[in-house]
Image (cartoon, rainbow, N blue to C red):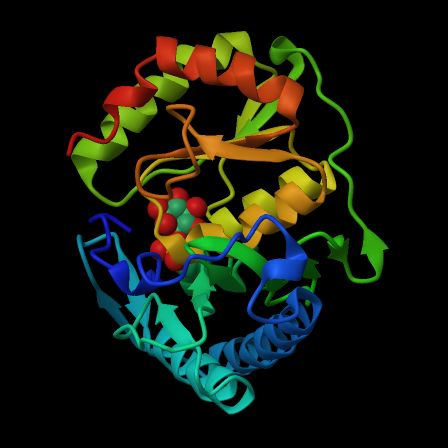
Length: 292
Ligand code: LIP
């Protein structure tokens, strides 16, 4: 995801709903999470099956930014199943045009998050689907394709991996924090991101680069890493995983300290780790990675 998506179809201007309270929502968040999980499982089944039969690869913003016909098939299936379940909701996905709705719910989905991993057969790659209100997730699911590892969350109702409730475990001191991150597709931005990593690497335990943002966020919720930050994501990379982190008791914020903004950069971590990590990132140029 390289360009800030011009997608105001997220419905933000049109619905004055307080999404912080599950009772004020236009639909039941747990029912939406059930839909998200069911659709993500079906799309993950399609992706797994289609990979076994071969696929074509195209490029998007740069020569390294790939899209496959399986991304497109998964995108189409997600739209079809969401429309069957919730015909009047909006839909925003990575590989097709936005559909506006009339309910205040907008689905945001990534048909394959981690397309490079998918192409190489390098786990993880997953389907990520969230229901949002005013641009904030209220229900979501992430399904890792090859392992069928399933995560879901609903606002106010917790985060789960399968049937197991998730809690972000604890906040280590910064020097013992295992930090996941990722890199964009444009060479210029990538080199700025690499400079940030080079600056922080001596002040933390280590870096992980798994190549799949939604899975990195689930890893924060499940305690497989202590924190995750990245710049230049799309809303579909972030939405479901963001809720899975916050419903597991963690925090997700903009790198600049504001609301999470996928494109300008986000940090996800235990609340006590987030502040020190932000200071370290900013001291090493994290606010200069996005230049427009
Ligand atoms: C990818 C992310 C990855 C990030 C890439 C890209 P895609 O999503 O999951 O973590 O580093 O820049 O955004 O393009 O595979 O859906």
